[in-house]
Image (cartoon, rainbow, N blue to C red):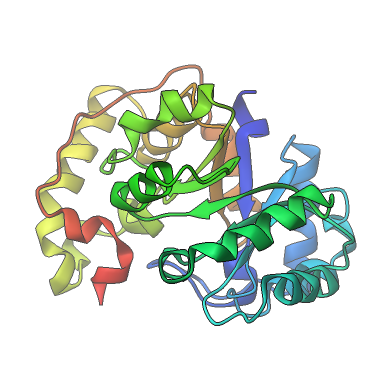
Length: 278
């Protein structure tokens, strides 16, 4: 699988304001147009969560979203897994899902037995793949040490953030489908270098290094960041979020035949997690 077929359309912005450069939530027509353009370009999966505001409801009411497979997530405080899953199905207008992830690792850490409920969903055919949305390798280590059976994993990965890379080959070869998010570091790569918030000013030197890499390779930031993930052989899905069709098409056009690694090492690793930006 290569090119646009590797893209997974993230839909958090359909349900709530999201990202450092967000233009706001697209309306119903814009969502429909995005879905039509995505599917016709080879995109086949949507990523959502019951924690993404009205995202599941928006997808459920969008006729153009019907042909897509859907990955949703079980949130913290979601009650019983089976009940939360059925609520998501109802909102999405589906009878089954492609994937269902545990959205917050602390939920499993506090109650590992909850995973039996995920296994039951998969074993009864309600969902094809189950897994975790993780933020740190330490979380993955805990799951692997416990021998937890999963077949879908979502993690952050971009040209600044490679902390999971040592796991990718083994996971992929063991049958785990790997989806990566934060390809553009929630839009930080495109933020004006002179307008960075105080908290993010330490990132300026790395962003400028990325600018130099793009110029040296006659590529845009967009191309550098997207192809870095798309062309990784162990990555099965690359999440991208868009506000309109033009942004989607820009992503698709940016997919080329080569990937460039800028080789940038960020010392301020806490700033690679947008949770720490506020």
